[in-house]
Length: 551
Image 1 (spheres, rainbow, N blue to C red):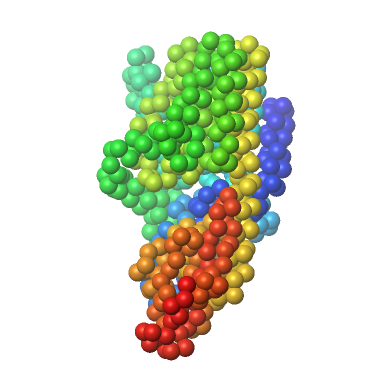
Image 2: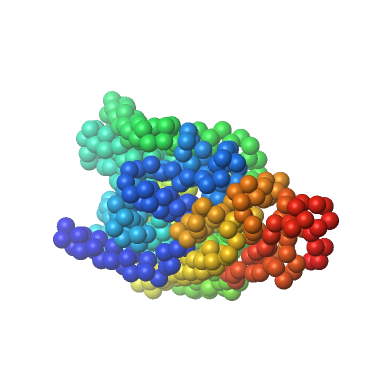
């Protein structure tokens, strides 16, 4: 216990040091920017828990079509950009004390809990080192490392689900009595308040545990299933009650229902493609070349352990390094971001009943998650964020297997895991600093109203942008409406921000666009610029020919 506590403290300290490399005004994804903008709004009010981010142009745009934060919902008299409250509320006191870096303590603690669950599962798989290798590889050389130092709820969700699986493993082996099923159900329910896929993993994990018990004790199997189901609804009910008391309706349940309803609008071909991207793609574009590269890396890692082939492991590392020649990027594929997971798939049949159960939970859940996951975001994520638990479970099985391999093979696979995660860290550092720099440059613009033609731009810089001067218009009709809103608000000048190859019209309502000299560039991700076009009120008071034709 003493060694475990010291290891947990050391891992947390490493996370804290790694987080200092990132700019606190930039993030791994746009969802984080929306959460930080919400934390800023709640903190600015000085008290309470209302997640309302407000909307300065509500009187002219009551439906919120032009709200600066994309995906903001108008609920009653509130404007809400977040979809889950538990992680937000857990982080709020720390945010008020130490800002964004303080709030990161919550995902860091979640990641430590995931690493401890990895050690617990490794012990049940017969790890000779007591799970120490699994603890450190999962903690410092897996997607959990990446999500620990950005404000996501993923580490908390995976930690709760992982420990629920630990309990169900013991229940399936009859190492715990049926009342422990209440713990497993409560953990899955708590995870589902933050991660909808927890419902799928809870269903599959419980069904497989009950199936394992049914042969020897049908009554025990039924009892476990009923107790898990009964306990699972408790956190969901409490969370729904909190959401109704704060915002007036159930947010998480509505989001889950909406995702299921819209899943029918996604073609089977697109579902299959996004499933492949989150399984094996090595780059965010999800191209056939990217998926081929990812599949090769996974196969080589598995061969390295099965065949005791050091050249195969070295070849996998060479391919990962070659992938970075075009620049740093997301690694959305589970088997690439978590190399031991490829080993876990290949050797699961050798790991006994516990290994079979863990692998079945990981693999059998995938089709259901892929069938209902949010469509359109498979590429810009790290390690398949909807299937993180599958990668974690398969990774633990693989780590236990490589611990028994020759030292050179074991060290090479661990080194590959470190390499992939280090590249992810480098990408995150680069991304956060570029976003923060670009957001600050945009915020320094002199126009009183700025209109973004890039949907998630303002969410990217959620800690920087003044939401009282921004609008988001993703099409030409919205852009014209945004100009009318700015005019009604009394703005003499506006700035339109978009990609350089998409110049806005010469005239927007009563505003005229300046000549070419009136547009400027702002650096954005990976050096890609954004263009800012300056508009001024037409001195001809809107007559059709008073705007300069020069461009």
